[in-house]
Image 1 (cartoon, rainbow over the protein chains, first blue to last red):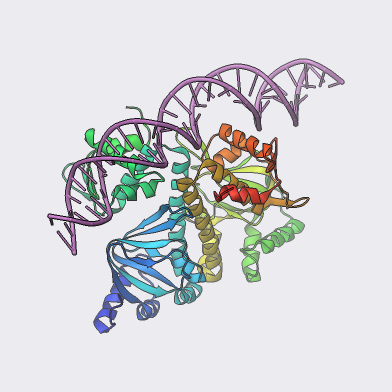
Image 2: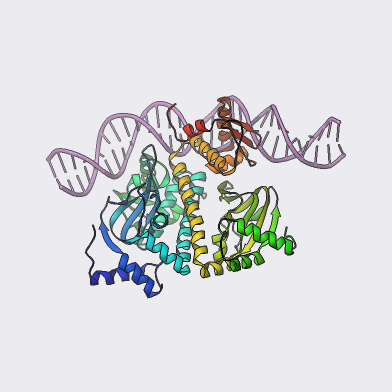
Length: 241
Length: 241
DNA sequence: CGGCACGTTGAAGGGCTTCAAGCTCTGTGG
DNA sequence: CCACAGAGCTTGAAGCCCTTCAACGTGCCG
């Protein structure tokens, strides 16, 4: 739902951009052009920012909340390609080229996003090499993550992969509790974990139940606390004992 | 093995750069600086351009031949992350940041490569936004491929994945023969196909044997001809009949 | 408080891995 | 030139990991 722009909001928009790592420290003129074009939207659990296959003209900066990028397969399965946290850019590269979005962007936790036109970004990147290089860095980091997942999906067992995704989520959205415990600060169903790891919700359920019995985690409805992170590392790395 | 630079070779180097899509049409001054710094190497089947974990200062432009990027897992398995054909850039992003190579670059077919310093490229990219944007496009294309593979590894059966990688290789290095037949123009063992698809060489062998019986392919030692490409598509897409 | 999404658990079975043995090419050195 | 070593490949057998189907809890929210 678009919100009417006024001067207060415009200032807020510029602030939000400045706080975004990829835009931090850019010349004020560049920030102004971005802020003028930006539109702030808010969205809630289950909403889609865009749908797989739609032609992209707009990309998004996540200001608050949680998003994920999901690809739908021909036979109806969903595969989660990435989880996003505030500061992340979503759908940038396809918006530059007006390509179809490669997946749907789904809101996990009530979110605020800035919508920005791909054409403007394209222009700014061609004028400002520093900006291009930063975007390159971001995309390269995602390629790196994607390669890691390919390696894991190719060579590891389901258990190891689930352990890894819990650890990765802990690094991204973990909140420390008593002792070594880490609470994952997002709604996360068995189905979500299955889509992240190329498995089924039943297998995830059995795995989490087993870990809960061993005191490694505490698994509630759409909510997980890691009690013994080190033990998860042992499982993820397939270490002895 | 480095080859002594002389004027003839330098001209050849500049030509090779110009023929590389990512450098084509850049200002001559930029091309000159790249050509001056480039060193031509040749390497043969089994050689490694670099090894996983080494700190990267150099990236490579593949001039002729075939390469692949392989990641080694902790427990000794190898996973092929990408196959490269002439014109591709290898190890660029890590060379820009002096990070460790994320995998080893292995020569599949006798190859010539240009070695270029990451620092120079970094400099040129910061001066020339057009160059940055092109590199971004290349990395984005690889991210797109990686996401496709993640989706396939997550949701598809081994048969489908093998069919897909044969079709992908056909698109990259396929040579048309009689009728619809396509010969894959690279050395490709059962083990190679297994590493591309997260499976074992035995499963690949059984699958190819079955397809050969059905007349879909002709499978020789490190050498495959696709006889009925459409039938492979049917398998890859899991279509009826 | 009823509906529905989320979650658990069991049972059956299949796809794929693993281990093992032996075959078939290819290149190489005696 | 041929034997032989080794890499590539095939095939069989056993079985496990995981999926699939099914039925039934459980907790949340309107």
